Image (cartoon, rainbow, N blue to C red; front, side, top):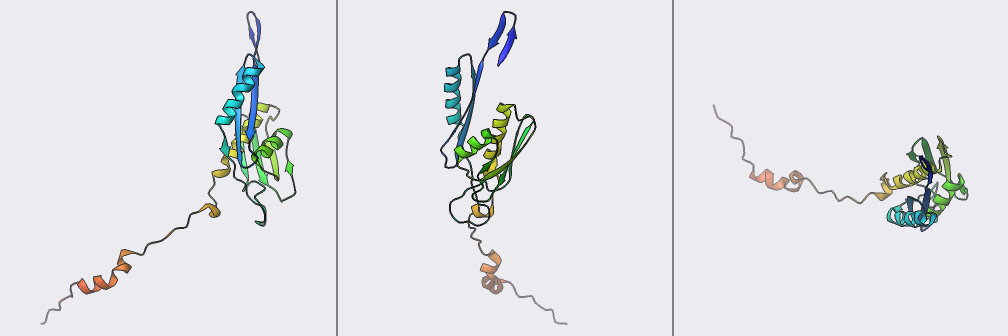
Length: 174
């Protein structure tokens, strides 16, 4: 990134670093500095601090380990819109190189992608991908529901007691 000043140009370096364990976690760090090494070190630190879980799911049958995204996910940054779409097992990552690398670091093996906007702005493109992956735990699907133990109504539980203790209506004789 260059900024024009009265004395000339001031050059700064911007680093985008993605970290992941290939098992459902990914982090993204962005740092700008006057030196490349400082930008990279700062971005690595920020990436480790912003690690988020990425939920993986199935396409079709639930055999084997989860291999794709659980549902369609959409992320945005600037004019860039990225959509991650579940794919059948064996499809691979049908994506741009940056998206492919981030999905690989998150442990997603099969996924279709769709993008709109000015994707050549690499910073916004990477942030949009990260935003989409962060939303993977935003939707609570039925397999994540906890078992609910319903209690019986107090009326049905104490019906015999209430029937005995209720006052009997008196009928007036004429």
